[in-house]
Amino acid sequence: MVSPLEKYYDKFEDYEKIAIRYNVKIEGPALKPEDDPEVVEILPAEEGIKRTLALDVLYGDKDKCDADTEKALEAGEDPIDLINNALMKGMDGVSALYTKGEFFLPDLMLAGDAMMSGVALCEAKLGHKADAKAKVVTCAVEGDPHDIGKNLIVMFLNANGYEPIDLGRDVPNTEVVKAVQEHEPALVTATALMTTTMTAFGKIIALMQEAGLDTPIGCGGGAVRRDFVEESPQTFYGVEAYHVPKLADAIVDDGKTWEDIRNEYADIVGEYVAAYS
Image (cartoon, rainbow, N blue to C red; front, side, top):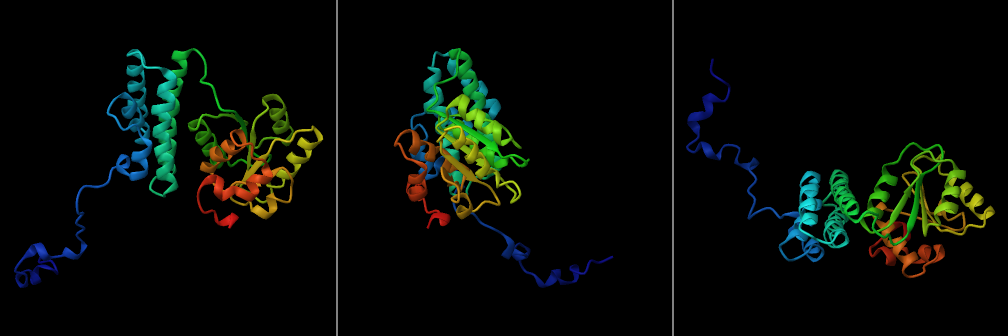
């Protein structure tokens, strides 16, 4: 049986021209993540173990990161130096590409796993956890089972030298207050995905004020709006998970208050933020 197209074959002089409109020709080699101009400025420039580890994290290769970290430690590399100038640099590169929309959630999660595994090996060599800039209490609020946003915050905090106190999801308001009393964090972050749970923000604030706690609280999530958050004192509206380390830096390093963050949010995170325009 002759196919419907075969009767037209003799009309073509050059079969390579058939469906040529669907061919995509790429001019030059594809740009590698480490060749992005912003990432070039972040990663260690010299070839060596630090650059290798940074690339392991950038590519989210946990097994290779573990092997290379162990090799570096056996060779006498300083664990703190590896954490700060290799593993975290790789995560900084991932964050930069995520911010630009070139990396996505799976890239973040894989890179975060690789980095934290390498950090754990370095801390095991040290015999203790690396010193953190400060503690940050994180939670998904009471009644809310959605914790992807909170998990991203934890990952970005780890990648930037903070110690997240991860309370998990559906955390009772009273437990948040207890954690603040126990850990004395520089910042609290609370997330809510549903309109029925975001009322927890105000309840947490009320309990904290009763206890005499003035720790600022960053509130965010899918259902949350800036105007709703700012109805409560001591709060600010958090827009993106990757903003949290910069906001924490502003509090820890620059002494910014929750009021300052409300007024200077876009300047602090270093980008245009529609909610604060």
